Length: 240
Picture 1 (cartoon, helix red, strand yellow):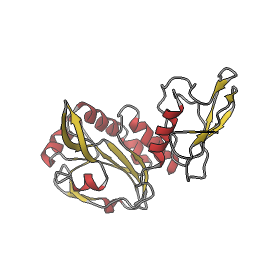
Picture 2 (spheres, rainbow, N blue to C red; picture 1 turned 30 degrees about the horizontal axis):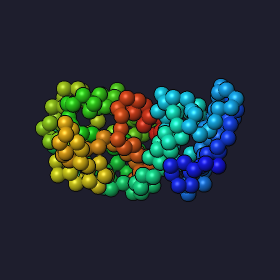
Picture 3 (cartoon, rainbow, N blue to C red; picture 1 turned 45 degrees about the vertical axis):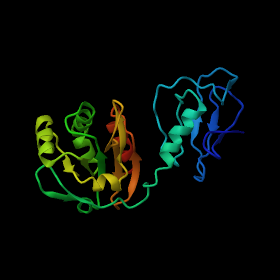
Picture 4 (cartoon, helix red, strand yellow; picture 1 turned 180 degrees about the vertical axis):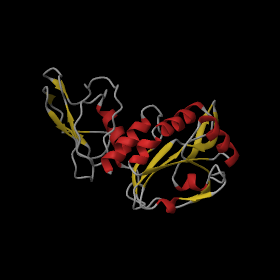
């Protein structure tokens, strides 16, 4: 066995034959996600000789899954799986809050107990990535509602900014304003960022899937918008 970049995460350092399974055990998880090698020439090795990246699939923490890997190296597997299995908020009670929404009324997370909540944090109204993400959640609004989920978006923008943002793009879900950054800090999404060589505090685009019991069931941090809404919906379907 050859050690990976995560302590105790190991993969066999041996030739992989076409169709052979390679088992990787996450530290402390007791589970072994399986990575199915399909169509590779005999003699392809498990260490440092994978096909180029191109998929972006990330297996859920602690789940047994099979797929054809699209990874350039073992380090790629390690970093992706580490990001999935190490978030400390998974399984914890979601921090409660009450914040003003775009209509000016306070919305409290506790009022949604008994149903799923897709809680997403984004940097700023009317910026390209945030607009695309909001439009994506609006397009999938009925699909999420059909799965018993409410969508809530939070940023540091003002209520007035949210009103204009929602009206301009026909947004159908709750948009909450956290100008004091308290909730952003509670969820660990308010961090230093660097743009054009200057450091400032801002929102790290993140999504939290909260179960009917109020516990965090899944977390996506440093979100890339492309494909993200579909990934959240699929995870919700799997957990429902």
